[in-house]
Length: 442
Image 1 (cartoon, rainbow, N blue to C red):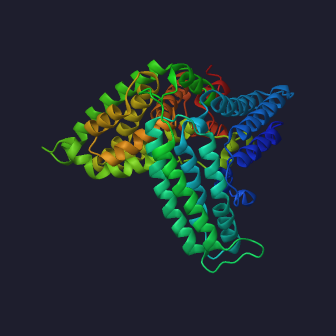
Image 2 (cartoon, one colour):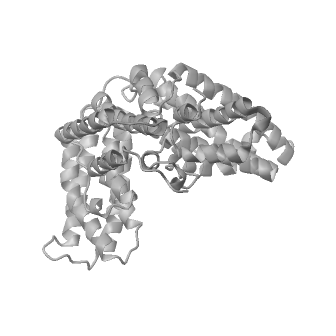
């Protein structure tokens, strides 16, 4: 399907260039080779400059002369992305509060290049560039992080162990790879490892942690601003928490029936035990768009997909496939994923807005699903560090199913699933609330 150029596409590309400059790892994942040798700069001055640039682009988007509803949809998508990014950096100060975010960036920066084709000289040059940048990057961490939550310190120390493993892999990859005018790779890796060890000691022994028991929580006001600005959701945190409770209860009932059909007499928790590890791995991965990005009607929609729509669509597709197979084992696998996402929604809201302790969240996950304590703790770490991420799948599923039901009700006997899907594809992975606006349902 061909796409229509939007007056906002150039501004969207500028916003992406800015994002990739601030987060070169995101640029590497997007195939931007110019970002490959760099690490991000998340010190206070760099964050202030980035926020100012985000607001400048947002101002230009607000002032753009637009004529069509499609263009107004694109404006809303782009403004939401810019305002959300700026607001999170200003209000939540994630790089001041969370050293684990720095460690994840360092780990991902090395991993994305180590996973690339091993014989490409340009990739090894970029890998050496990132190794050389690591000591200054970790110095920025020590300069910037202040009174982090103990949960974030623990996650950062675990992350440091993984970065050390990546550095060892980089040492092996760079063996014998000399770059004219650059440092010796073995010395560069040794310097990075020393900086990493120093940072680990600083986190363990010198960095004063926050004293409040819920220091990881962003609070209800900031959480609901994320709902509205980042995800274009009208729902309150309390409403979404109840959605999670209802979906959990409903899914457990369906699992009990499906397990009785597949393995009569075996408790459903025992039936799903072999499937839970894969469900956790899928939940921790970034969602892969279940439809080709070229289907969207504008470049803006392809550049700024909604993670709520992407994860929700993934769950809906699983449900449709399971229904097509009409087999209990496929249905149980789908329901296992759905139950996990219901629990993640419930805990996401509870951790950030209802005073839940991280340890209680781990215990609740262990009690609800047959997963390891390690997996439960990893999921809770991610929920604490990335507010609203846990709700994406369950809320996206809810909103997509409601969208289809409302279109079906509006069209009555004239409803055609293929026509609905063709209309849906034009919106790409835009927030469902904006799809409803574009389809005339709001």
